[in-house]
Image 1 (cartoon, helix red, strand yellow):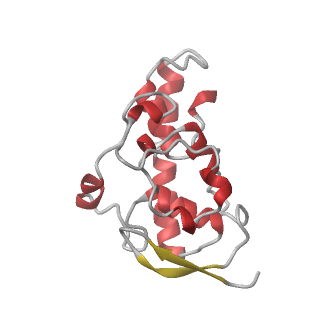
Image 2 (cartoon, rainbow, N blue to C red):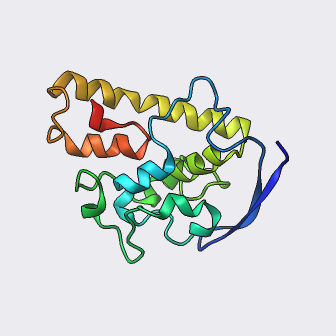
Length: 168
């Protein structure tokens, strides 16, 4: 694949990066997200506030059915209608934010999905993604199968990490 340059110009970041893999393909063997970024946005994640000022960076198709709210974080837009997010400041204070992706994990995932690769950062984020699996186990242990009203905050948090908690 020929390298493609992607321009970034939003409230948090300006610059560019290169895509080196085809979109949605050639993921690390241990990274198997259950939802694409477009599916996540359509289901309702991050109170609809995430990425409202950087839509030009990503495919228009991702936003056709996305539940977004440019004015504020609105938990009612989330699939489970609950707030399962921590403020960005918490993520920054814990050192979870990489300068290349100042919005956090989901921004990294969107760019990774498109074909950007940063081996060291990819390994770190995939390790974090794998660690979230403990919440899948907690749902399986504590909730009857597919009882979506059981632990909605935990289910919403899993959606934020591309785990399809509707099927647990």
